Length: 203
Ligand SMILES: [Zn+2]
Image (cartoon, rainbow, N blue to C red; front, top):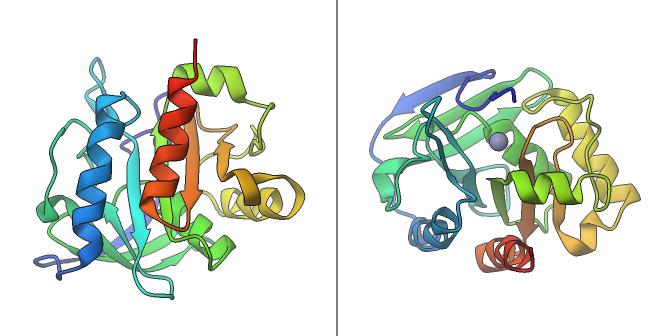
């Protein structure tokens, strides 16, 4: 397989600083652990490349808090592993962030989802060969020709939101991103539980 995780495709304008205090940080840390334990966030051991990341919108605008790049291998995370994305421009593939680490290389995927609808407050991006192979095409799936981290991916999420039941089910397969799925919700509990329950239902 082609592992395209870990390569920062987007331009990242990073201000290194301590992470400002947010109540969402604790929630992110708490929900990340069961996702990591389920193998939905982790590391491809052979390649040493992390996968999966979670985020929460801060306020009602474009800002969101997201796990940092290359944190996939960690079971326990703290505020030092998160970054605040203050602006993201899918068309120019450019992200501005501030915090102790650079935002995940998949920040653009998260940004694209937050831009899709203001009701989306939490995004979970996981990798699962089983879920991806089993569900691609059966549940809302982005065009396989569209790679992650591209402006086209943002348009794909918007299309699914309009044309499929993604709006109600909150889970989609990223057709052009091997093993990649996203889960969204009005809270992190909703987004994380959805994908964990899906995983549990697998034979
Ligand atoms: Zn991914």
